[in-house]
Image 1 (cartoon, rainbow, N blue to C red):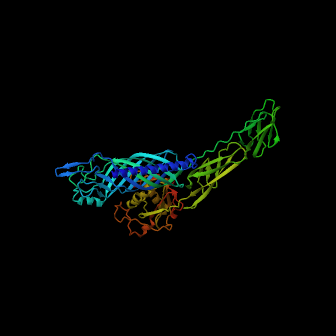
Image 2 (image 1 turned 180 degrees about the vertical axis):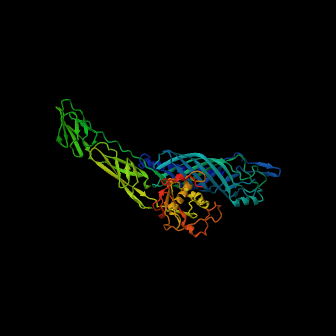
Image 3 (image 1 turned 90 degrees about the vertical axis):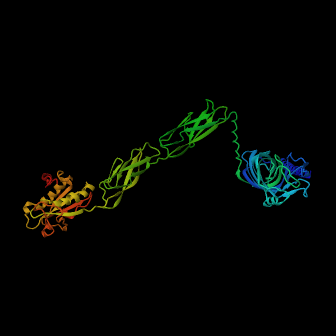
Length: 616
């Protein structure tokens, strides 16, 4: 009976506290501290901490007193389990998304509500207590009675919760070792719950609220792994299907953030007063309002003037037309702003006037930009020019005409042929584009880099040697032409071949052995039949140098028996005069430099190499 009175008294005390706080806050709001979300800013989110006291009341109907067993008479009291009142601490978070509705998450992470179990009597102790922690996790809506931004905000809430009870380690051990209890160790228990209640938030500072809460919790009775049926005297039990009703009274502080300022929309400007009877109203409009020299502007008036009214137009204060509309011409006028005014008079009306302005733009010559792509080319390559010109007045801009400081321009294409650039060097060439309108012209410039590749040097191959007074290219010489030289011809088909023929002293000069030796070598790489190659004869240069060796050192290729020769055609390294009976063989890469010994060489075509066919 005493425990019931204590629990009921706790509920009454918490309710009275909540009622008094709510009433006093509402009284302050109504007495002059009024504020609503319509006339002050507010914060959307808040977090806080709270502390207070927590009570539990057992609602089980299975605790009827009185019983007997075969071991003797005993009875058990009306309430086998209860929880001692204790302190509570927790944290909470609020989100006020709507003016009167929010959401709250709360966690009571500490509450000390010790377990009270009443042993079956007779027993030496009326109540056996165990240490126990209680906690709750809650999420639910908040229903406010005043709008956001109010200094006092009463609210109520109801929603789901998760309740848990955790016996202390000492309590679990004690329950196991007390002989009279004969019970297993107390176990951690949890249940779903329904939480409900209300509170009041008080606005203290811009960022902090003080709040008072009273919360009720309805949940199933925890059993802690204790039997549901009473045993002999001193035994402990917790009836099944019981329930617990809890009350938590707390105070706390909330910190707010994410401010939402109320947007104050200024009132629309007051409409102009209506014209008095007898006043003439004038409103002018010009189309267009910005023109080039030579253009015209039509100015019209919107007015309440009668048909017999007198119109007087003016331009920059100088009187002009008296027509009902004005055509403003710009021929001969300087650039600038012109004020156009109209004065109206009519019998029986007070005079009226209005004005507008027209801008005459100054003439601006054509201007533009030019570019070239690609911006770098090699000599003889081309590039595309782009130019764009605009103007403000005086007719359309004609297509641009471009010129270059070196090279040439055709239409909008630049050709770098003829630009003088050192081998391996580069030069910047300026391109100027000019465009005209009906009055003048404008220019735009750009530049392009013209480069020249470095000159390539001629490649020297082994000399072809001959027997005395003989012009036939032996098999060893053909190996030079058909194997070694061919690799260069395949890689660079647009290159050139230079063949320089020589004779030894005492050989018959009138037979022109030097030229015939070089032409026979040219035929082997150009005849295009039999074993001969099909290289373009116009790319073969032939030079006959006679006994003059031209400063070119001897570069022999004797084969030394590795190649079978026709009788009388073999030349060996023992022949010391063979170095004078030779043909120099050069390959000149495309755009390469001719060797010094080329002299006044002529192409093999002009020397009639095709008549030789493919030499044996």
